[in-house]
Amino acid sequence: MDFKDVLIVTDLDGTLLDDNKNIADADIRAINEFREKGGHFAAATGRGVAMARRIIDELDIRTPCVIFNGAAVYDFKADKFLWHSDMPEIADKYIRMLEKEFPDIGVEILHEKEVYVTDNNQTVVEHMAFEKLTPTYRKLEDVPSEGRLKVLIAYPPEKIHKVIEYTQEHCKEGVNWVHSSPMYYEMLPEGISKASGVRKLVEILGFQDKFVAAAGDYGNDRAMIAEADLGAAVDNALDSVKEAADIIVSDNNHAPMSEIIEHIRRL
Image 1 (cartoon, rainbow, N blue to C red):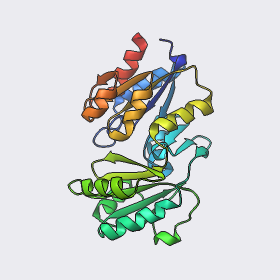
Image 2 (image 1 turned 180 degrees about the horizontal axis):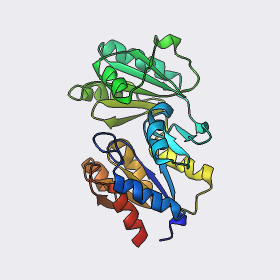
Image 3 (image 1 turned 45 degrees about the vertical axis):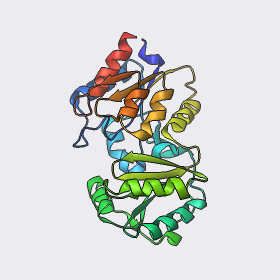
Image 4 (image 1 turned 135 degrees about the vertical axis):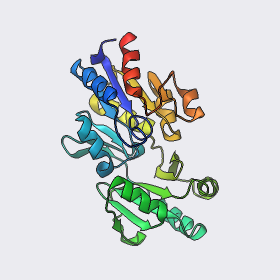
């Protein structure tokens, strides 16, 4: 297949990034060759602007990317949002309900270019340290209402199922919930997902005639993979994600992107 006709959209954590949050040299070489031959390469990540920038800059990604799990399309080269969808007002009600039901819960509100922590816990502390970010600590009522793109609930993996069960019973109206990692559960605007974000990206770029390949590993990647012309799951992906994929490649520690690009080459 001619790479000029292809858009690859990949998840970052657990897919393109290995367990140490690095990108394999073989993947970097394959991505560079893919782009040199006219291919279009983008990320679709739950990360916001600040959290994603290091990886985007390292790969010199020039195509706009889907961030905040589909709530925005961002052009990192121009440093501007091309589109975004703000959280609805009802999100505050749900946060209050969760705070009451789970007093030790961690809550991060990802604003356009800033991370606000309204409820701190050890999971949030570890998240911020790992990402090397300094968040802004504020009460919920003091977080700017405009520009909120998602809410991240941080809770230990062995307890987060209780939060999931509670939200599915009491906090579903007007929002979309996604389980993005063993310790993160995220509230997004209604109808928003990585799949909807990729559709918006394709629309913005005028790439309706392109062959779209999507790669991922977790539940928030499943719909994006299922909708793509070529859906790829890494070997460390959840079984439900593998079931939605057309191909399964090596795990995130063994250069899976190089395999995906080679598969496209042979189509």
